[in-house]
Amino acid sequence: MKVAVTGASGFIGRHVLRALSRQPDVEIVASSRSASPVDPEVVAIRHVSLDIATPSVDDFEMLGRPDVLIHLGWAGLPNYRSLHHFETELPRQYAFLSSLLRAGLRNLFVTGTCYEYGMTNGELAEFLEAAPSNPYAHAKTALRRQLQFLRANQSFDLTWARLFYMYGADQPATSLYPQLAAAAARGDRTFAMSPGDQLRDFLPVEAVAGAIVELALHRPDSGIVNICSGAPVSIRTLVERWRTANGWSIGLDLGRYPYPGHEPLAFWGSTRKLHALIGAETGQSAA
Image 1: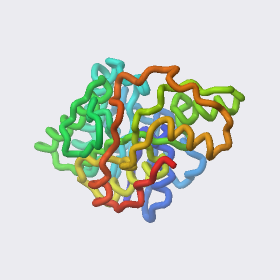
Image 2 (image 1 turned 180 degrees about the vertical axis):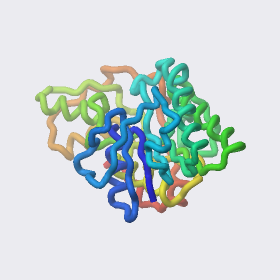
Image 3 (image 1 turned 90 degrees about the horizontal axis):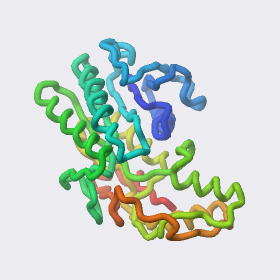
């Protein structure tokens, strides 16, 4: 089986490549803007330079006519409120994916976002209507709907994974865990953060990558699937766990920053569908 991964040089992409490398009889094609190797830990892999901003009619051939595409690429993050997401990125994304599907791709896996649920508190299950409240989530929702319309004329399998929060190696420096680690390494006395009582759903990135690979390779055409822990945890509790696990003595300056305006106060994902598809081993907490 040949599996292509777009956005392979990103945080999630690197871990997906590692998870794929542990699968038997899988030929991996890693796509990013640069053709240079994206992960020295994964050597049995072909690297392709491909930019969806400058598409080619030969993109499917360049990817080696894969049996499966795991599509992780999306530009413009982490600015979720930028109009770029639906003014520029959405048409680029659809043009790229629809071109591959018309060229012969039959199994497509795309990562969406928990923000597609909008400002809804509580447990979020896949049967809930999408209600995006920021440009990024709106563009992701629109792309999913465009692909569903395309299926009326083009036969292909589609899995849409709504990702919640994750942490781990190679995470962008602007994320919570790297910011805390950097502050502790500098010897800062305190770490400035929000009040910290928001409830979120965190999962180690290795578990996220494992679920992506399992769904893409072994559970095609699964529709919308949450990839999450199903275990709500407060941001303060999470930070305190990280602090204890690493032996950091840094204090917490709670309430320095306001609550983020683009997400509800308390939400987490339902894992019922994920566990029904691939089992409960991915439902790891953020402990």
